[in-house]
Length: 267
Image 1: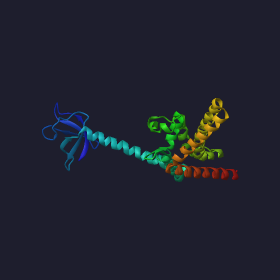
Image 2 (image 1 turned 90 degrees about the horizontal axis):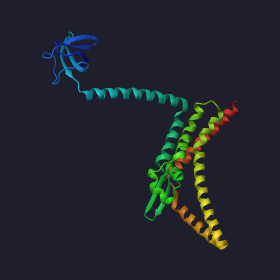
Image 3 (image 1 turned 180 degrees about the vertical axis):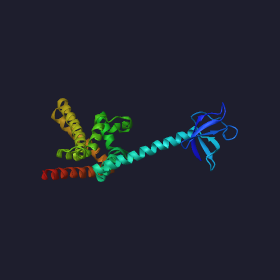
Image 4 (image 1 turned 120 degrees about the vertical axis):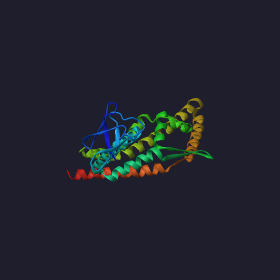
């Protein structure tokens, strides 16, 4: 079967189709095989004999045409995507791209911290959830609500850190090689910030106790906060996502420093 396009319907005599760069006539009674009448502009399936005469025509459902067009567009997009991906791989290197991809999965989907909320219930959060907690100032009691929270500027900085290792491949400055260090530096900064927040909270509580209860009250408060902090730390364990992220981030940093040293020595 060939495809043709109706140029003229059969309302005023024989119809006309365009097929194989030729115009062919057809009739409603002799050639048309569909239950719906032919209409101008419609794409039809055409059966022709050995001498090039039209034997039959059939209408094609619009959904079939739409599906074929969608598949064609998808095929073009896939071809262009493969070409673009090939250029990126050639420019950046497959190893770097794979490491960034796995690191992204570790940050967004794998557990970074496990919190033993009770003897029978454990809450696991990703590194991205940690960023949400930092952005919203949520404590351990607020872990359940992180699903609908926003990471804000911290989320933006995360994706900036993930993209930073690509910079040396598009900019010639040797200092761009330090972009490989961005993921591990960002992780250290976030966890250091969380630790400082907890420590400041302990110091503030101790200071308040010292103000209202004197030295003895401050000592009791410090002991109590120390015990609470110890219990909290015992309830927290690092998840598989943390170890994968630390390992890959450290290796990326090693690659960046090595590239920088090589570029420096060749100058």
